[in-house]
Length: 89
Image (cartoon, rainbow, N blue to C red; front, side, top):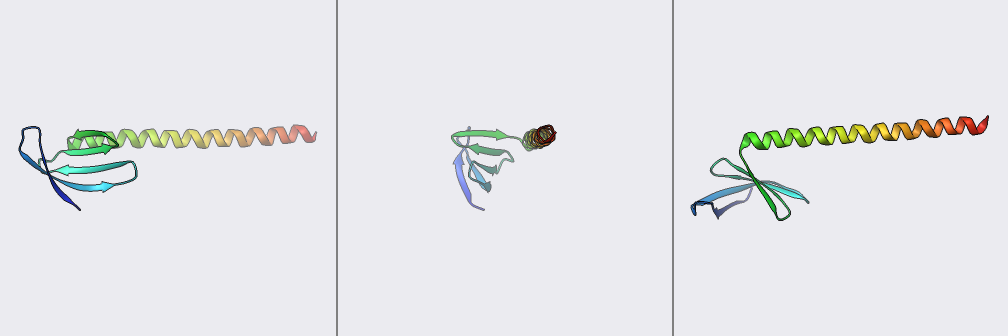
């Protein structure tokens, strides 16, 4: 983990630790207990409870999206099988 000091809103030094970093986003934790989520040039400053709620909401969205994608693929497969049966008749 990399520890950095940055000026906070009140011009006090706030030490941040980089907790995670990927190709799209990074997450820091401030010495004051807040989290900073960086996505490109956009940064969200969140309390732990808000970050947890955001994570839950994103998880639900991803799960629903994946379920819908599987359902679409299944429906396409069934339509293909139905078309194959009709063309052989």
